[in-house]
Image 1: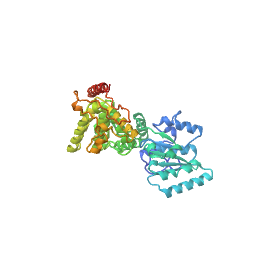
Image 2 (image 1 turned 135 degrees about the vertical axis):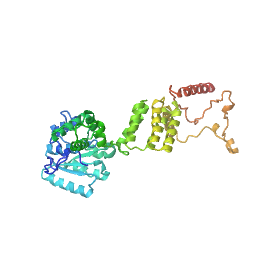
Image 3 (image 1 turned 90 degrees about the horizontal axis):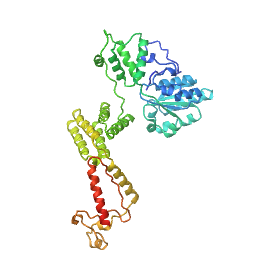
Length: 438
């Protein structure tokens, strides 16, 4: 996938004489001209420090589309006098990689280094990624990979240990406004937009500089009298689809944001992230399942109705479908955000599971085992069992843990919501148990 401000294979700007798109004409010729990535290219930026020290290492450029990954790679080749080679993991197979490495070896033998730029590097499988390692180690290539996916999940640990990951930021409004201003200088006239429409145009790009310049080029081509309003612009242009991959990092980031907003009792933020996922095309059934999990994990017995509310919303969605059924899920999100919170049951469950693993196959005490046969009675099964309903207060206080195990305490209800009452009951039973034991 090409990136913002792409340049020619030599690292120099293209000199094609035919018509050139606006994004092509505005490509920067120096790293200092790249917009929106000052945290790595500014005077104290990590990449600028590497270049000034003459100590370039292999890099992984991680960031969303249209923020300058390919541009930076090409300009690095230009600034370091390395031969620039670009490949895409989408279209490159093992035979192609062999040819690239062989050519790089010949250049290396003749004193010429190679900066190999690999776009969409996360699409290479493990074996293909491993193929880069010996050529990185002996200096045949300086690898610069570009990815929109989290390298921690998509790239081999061995590759990551030999490269530095640089995070490129989504372009903010100030950076996008600079791009529009540069575009107007190139076009020799301002865009026919009112201030609110100009803001809307920037919003439509959703942090993607290349997408913004394509939109600007469309607007500049219109023959209009006066300036367009926000609504008029919206009728002529379609908003860029939100960056959201239902199987990628954005998916997990947004569900994490939704979950933590619910846990943090912020209904407005929770509703926002819920809406962001729907706008990105998320399956409402996935959201129904996850919010039900939130009810069990973060609300639990502080409000037992929360789980039922989620299940009812889920069933309502199944009956109504989209878009009507999504309102029921939104209501469940709001209910969860405002419900009293407790993870006491969740913590108790995990502790009980850990205890069950550590105690192995310890048998129950014989007094709580049934004795359906004579032999089992002779073995002491059921002997001494106290029937709780025969006790005056309906509580015998007997031990139900294995005889070889000390009594454990897993569940610690909080002083919130319905668990306040459960806490009182627990303390009452513990007091009786201590009294019976005494």
